[in-house]
Amino acid sequence: MITQKKLKEALHYNPDTGVFTWLVNRGKGRIGLEAGSPHYTRKNGKNVPSGYMCVRVFNSTQLAHRLAYLYMTGAYPIEVDHKNRIRNDNRWSNLEASTRSDNSRNTKIRSDNTSGVKGVNRDKRRGTWRVRIHNKGREVHLGEFNTFEDAVKARELAEIKYGYK
Image (tube, rainbow, N blue to C red):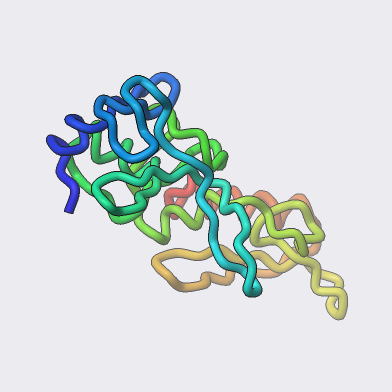
C-alpha cells in the first residue's frame, strides 16, 4: 500500500495544474520530468484509452486522480469524482471523494437519450413523459406527465431532494 509519505518522497503534485513530476530517478522517470501516461482499458479484446492518466510508482500502476487525493489528504479514497467530467483533469479543485453512487450521478447523458434530460423519456403508447431518478442504488419512479416541461421540473426537484445538486 502506498502511503502519502512515500508518495511525496517520489513525486511532486501541483494542485493548480494536476500534474505529477518526479523527485527521484526511477525507471523512465527522471527528476523534474512529468510523471504519468494515458491509461488504457480492455474493450472487446482491444486496448483502448480510458481517458484517465496513470502513474507507475512503487511497482504498481495507479490512477493519477487517486494519487492526487492521497497526496493532498493522506487518505486513499474508494472513489474520486472529476467534477467537470474531464477524466484527465486532475487539478485538485476538480477532484472530490465520492461513493460509487455519487460518482455515477455525475455522468453524461446517455447516447440513446432522446429527451435531452436525464431520467426523462417519452411513453409513445400513452403520449406521456415518464420521469425517474436513482437514489441509494434504487430506481425511483417520479410519475408520468402530460407535458415535457412538467416532467423536467419534476426531475429537477427530485435532483435537489436526493442531493444531485
